[in-house]
Amino acid sequence: MAVESLTLVVNPGSASHKYAVFAGEYEWARIHFEFVDGRIVGTIEHAGEQQSETYDDTDLSAVAHYILPLLRQYRVIGDDDKVATIGIRLVAPGSRFAKDQLVNNQTKTALQAVQQRAPLHVTTALSELDHLKTYFPDVPIVAISDSAFHASKPPWASYYGIDIELAEKFDIKRYGYQGISVGSVVRSLENHNVLLPRTIVCHLGSGSSVTAVSSGESVDTTMGYSPLEGVMMASRSGTIDVSAALAIKRELQLTDDGLEQYLNKKGGLSGVSGSSDDIRQLLVSESQGDERAQLALKLFVYRIQQAIGQMTASLGGADCLVFTATIGERSNIIRGRIFDGLGYLGFECDTAINDQTFEPAEMVNLGIPSSKPILVVPTDEAAEIARRAEQYMQKLTS
Image (cartoon, rainbow, N blue to C red):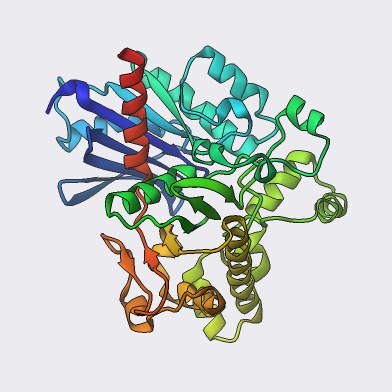
């Protein structure tokens, strides 16, 4: 192993923090920190094996401190090896963050300036950057924009119906997110020579979005100024009338931040069902006659079907439909329900293949022979972040 080739990938979230170590295109290890029974558990996967350690921290903010000890404890890297580059997923509104960039004091100042606009994601990113600088003081950090893939959208897919001068002055536009994942999927389609001119990518997980891809470029996506816009998600409401949101704020006597927290954390599958944001649990509850669980699932599927129609209009038709991310790759039931409403677009699923497809290692076509392609494509955000971080540093030093 060449020590200068190591890249640390950082993907911080509100419920978990994910890390990975790459040497070029080769993934050495993945590390995942999350709460289990009130304690933080760090799980490391390396060389086909998985080990876990438990920590007494009360939150996830400082788990970056445990990365190097874990990597050395389980002999992923030696004492003389070092991380040369860090790539961190960045979710933040504004044209300043719609491109990859080297993190410096100006970057942090710009993030602090938009922190009030997107407190959930930006606050997490700022905290993670502070800890990374503490534990990896001399390692360059490249912020990998989750919006950059959508920078190709035309103006009519990027603006809201508001005063353009105001939109420009305050950077209020539909930036779109989950672009790292969609970019990973598009790259996989290109590598397999199956990228068709009009492709719709459904990233379905705890956060969900549907993206229209024209010849490899984003022309529209359901997420907007923040990841809250678009389809209903696990705990996010998705698109909601601003008057309805303000009514919630008044009735519950919430602050601005409180309203954002409410729509992000207490909406979606969780809010509609009143019981869970987990598709698996909701399917069990539905089978037991839980009408709210049934409504939540129907609403989730319906919003995705609507979004697919919306993206078809953006593309002037659809040649291929792609499912990816946790629900997209794992839930044959949800995929099947979505397909039920898409026959008019020329997509018809092979039920047997769909039922057998669970988190495939390679892409799978679920369509019957006469159908347009319906693909399940594994997304790999970590590999995409590593590739873009290394590419950025190569350009910087060339």
